[in-house]
Amino acid sequence: MTHSAEWYFDFISPFSYLQFKHFRRLPDNLEIRLVPVLFAGLLNHWGQKGPAEIPAKRIEMYRYCHWYAQQNGIPFKTPPAHPFNPLKVLRLAIALNANHNAVAVIFDHIWGDGNDIHTDLGFQTLASSLGVSDAENLVSSDTVKKTLRDNTERAVSVGVYGIPTFVINDALFWGFDRTDMLLEYLKDPSLLQTPEMLRLAAVPSAAERSR
View 1 (cartoon, rainbow, N blue to C red):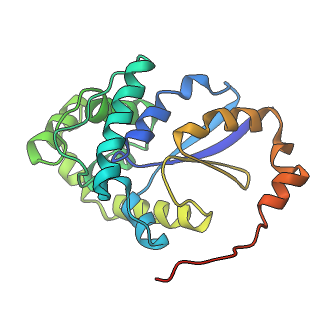
View 2 (view 1 turned 60 degrees about the vertical axis):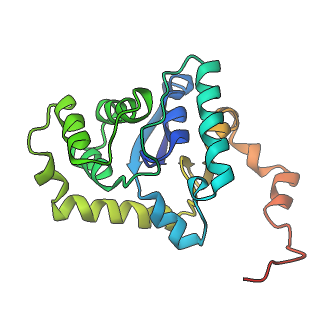
């Protein structure tokens, strides 16, 4: 039986890169549509901060990703500046139909090799590695810009609050550490329908922080 899934991601996220490197673990009958979204748009909608916006968490995140990649034999080098503005690379991926090969080249350029992406030269170097000569025109397209906005709004509408996130049916699997749970769900979709799982979906709040 073939399953279909949407994978919401942003190149700004090292965790998106790490999960992308684990796609080899996913079953062959899973059809994945890669959906670039603007992480900042999700954060603004849900009223959250990104991990790199919290000083102590920022350092821990970089160290953990470096360690995890080493432990798992994944090429990894944090780029020279982070967080960076990912708009151009997201739009470039969309202009290239967000196909697997293009997304792989972009991820490897940023997180595998640790290249600069926040300068014009860095972006042009990436475009050249993709064989794209008119990158600036491509990323300035109104259609491409609208697609990125639509992708981000679509993510919000289905409840996506962080990246990377797999959406299969109505189930969300946020974070690269959810890969094992995703694999179990694909084998047995009733995983989320047990009495305890259903109870967890309706646990009430007993306190709320003042804002």
